[in-house]
Amino acid sequence: KAGVTQTPRYLIKTRGQQVTLSCSPISGHRSVSWYQQTPGQGLQFLFEYFSETQRNKGNFPGRFSGRQFSNSRSEMNVSTLELGDSALYLCASSLSTRTAAFFGQGTRLTVV
Amino acid sequence: QQQVKQSPQSLIVQKGGISIINCAYENTAFDYFPWYQQFPGKGPALLIAIRPDVSEKKEGRFTISFNKSAKQFSLHIMDSQPGDSATYFCAASSMSSGSARQLTFGSGTQLTVLP
Image 1 (cartoon, rainbow over the protein chains, first blue to last red):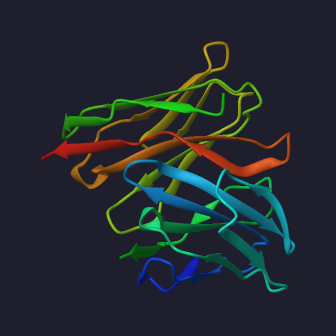
Image 2 (spheres, rainbow over the protein chains, first blue to last red):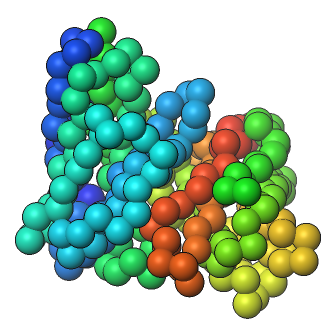
């Protein structure tokens, strides 16, 4: 069974631009959550989607948004990029909201 | 109250030794405690997880010990191998409150196993 697939793997964007990251969960998994990983703040929860509905949201500004499609694929968007948004963005999928989360390899975003 | 405190920040052990990583939490609503292993350039991989209704869970060389009254849990890696060298994260979430996937992570432990 294929794992969680995140695209692209690497991105370089300019401050002020916006970016969209994509996540394809493990086949059959309906829950997708997103995390930001930085050396200073560690792993921080962004949001979770289940059946196309946002279930929970972490403490991030409104510039960070996401959505989930009917096939469970998810996208997250960051608008008006800031230098501090440079991070590894990780997507995790779960069969349901009560089962283990499996992470993808992440998208490394660099804002210059 | 959402914080999970992890120690030590780094750990060096000899091959064949026991690696022990500790975590403490404050939020009594947490009822799911997974451990993740992360290699450079990779996403975290689920190692083992425990619910508070058991005090210990073992899978191969990996054991979680859980102390509900002290709000602490730890990962023991028996017979540590150089291939275990990675960063380990403890995490916690609340399944009962509907926030199962809102994992709160510890700050990570960089484990180095010397050959």
